[in-house]
Length: 180
Image 1 (cartoon, rainbow, N blue to C red):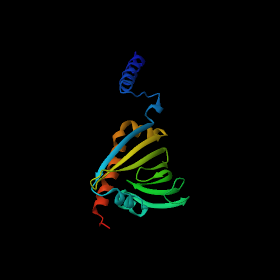
Image 2 (cartoon, one colour):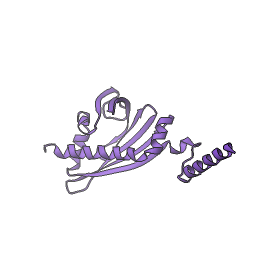
Image 3 (cartoon, rainbow, N blue to C red):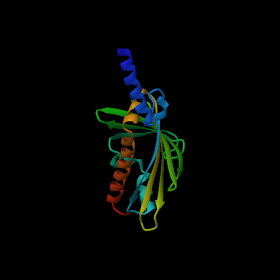
Image 4 (cartoon, rainbow, N blue to C red):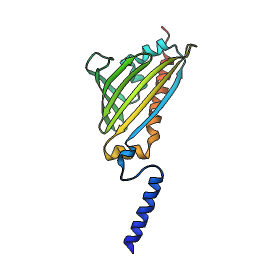
């Protein structure tokens, strides 16, 4: 009788989880996510690109960035590899950046790899014609490892929220810089 009750509880939980488009057995189902963020910056596109394209500025708008080190290739160009170290809470996270595409302002794309996380980001900048720029960031994550897949399942909005925060911080940084 006790085994039947446990089986009933497991079936109810499985049905609930499955009804939310996830199954406990199909871990790959929630190992990916894609989303897009955007923000309007009150600067002409040429100035936005100038500020965005300088890796020395990253520390001003990417909270937690401890270091950015060029490893190989021509800096900022497709094929270039860099090492980024972020402080996230009480831990340090090392990330490898590989630039995959560069045709600014149309696109600047790269792959960011850390333990159990693969992240593709395509940044584009649109000249709105009124001395403002729309900054669009299209993001894709792939997760491996039980912990990262669980975080993706339980807190998918946290990733999009963090990406939006980077855009907001870049906007604040860019708009606070003196005109040249």
